Every structure is written in structure tokens, then in C-alpha cells.
Length: 279
Image (cartoon, rainbow, N blue to C red; front, side):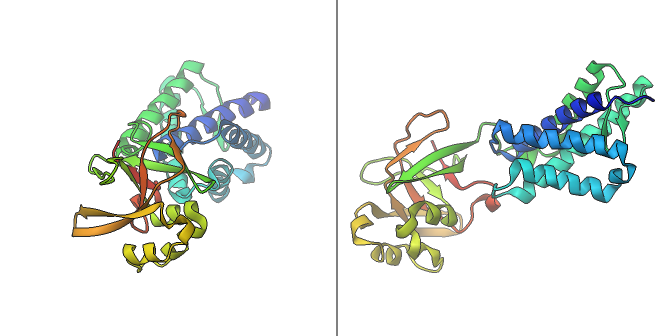
């Protein structure tokens, strides 16, 4: 079979872009398009190199290549290992279905370390669509809290001049409101709160410290923006959360959210998101 390198590069860059995008969607994160395009271009280049140097198509090197693509696309994400796992599952779904469809059509679709469009374009598109659907079904436990279900969103929270973009899960069980104002409460995990609060977050680094003690240790100039919030949860009949009033909170679409933020447990959702929101 004659392989045209430009076609090989283009097809694999497209498939790598689709695979990375699917992993990001299933993982419930948003990724800048230029990062996905850069990673996809690197994947296309690797497929060309594997044709010219067949040793590059060995399984260990293909795994390393996949990790490299994930690093190019997702580096800096808190759930990087989980995103890598999602990428490999989606890639395996795509490859398996592409091989099956290629066999059914009697034409070769996979070559070296990538795809080659030696079949009609509609077969390639069908393989990608079917792979996306199957991976979504197999990973519906992960996808349940992703943008596919619109249950995770990114909030831009500002406090004392510092801003952080945090991913929060819509949790119908979070019915907390500030007692005085009635504003809804966004519960942040401790690490995210410490990063956002800066100087005011220093007492929170001690995860054994009670909320009332942390409140007493806050800098005087900022203490007026904090308070204690009573709550109940599974395994906790009654307790107190430290909460604060941010400068402002914006949703992903730019609309303001009038709320307060509370400091929750050390980690929420095993690091898949940074907090919980009930509105």
C-alpha cells in the first residue's frame, strides 16, 4: 500500500484532536483550543515518524507518545493522571472500532502507529463517532459529572485582588445559604481555598484546626469578611465551616454569581473538581 505522508499526518492529527477533546469532555475540563491543536500536530508528526522508523511504533514508545500528547494538552490540570487514563481508553475505543470497520469494509485503516484513510471518509467519521459514544457509555460514571451533563462549570472567584478559576460540581445536596443574607454557598476544597485566599489562607494549611480557631487567627484587616456557617452532612450531625465573602464571582459565560464561599474538606471529588455548588 502506498502511504502519502501528508495524508497520514492530517488524518492522525484530526484523530488525535478528536481523542484529546473526548478525553477532556469526559473528564469535565475545558482546554484551550491551541493546546489541543498543538498536541494533535505532535501526534500527527509521530505517526509520520513511525512510518519512516518502524521501531517507533513499538508498544512502549506508543504509550510514551500518548503520555506526551496528554502532557501537551493537559499539563497543569489537577486531575492529570485521570485525564491520561481517559485518553487511553478513548484512543483504544477509537482504534478498536476503526479496525473493525476497516475489516468490514475490506480496506486497511490502521498502519504503523496511527490511522490511514485508505477507506472512504464516512467510515473514518463513523469510527470516530462510534468510539466517542462507546467510550462515553463505558465511562458514564466519570462522564456523569462532566460538561456532557452540564454538571461541572468553571467559576472565576476573586478575593482581595487575587483571582482563581475553579471547577465546581453542581450538587443538589448542597443547600447551604448564608444565614444573614440568604446567599448560596459555594463549598471549596481546602487546597483551592488556600490558593485563592493567599495570606488569609495560611491558618487553613493546618487541616486539624477547627473553623472557629482559624477564624480567630485571620489577619485583622480581612477578618470582617469571614464568618462561621453551621452545617450538617452524612456522618456529621452538626459542625461549622469557615466562609468568606469574595470580591466577585463570575460564571463561565461572564454572568455574575452573588454568593459566598466556604472552606470544605481537604479534597472534594478526589481532585476531579475544586468545589460544590447548589445553584
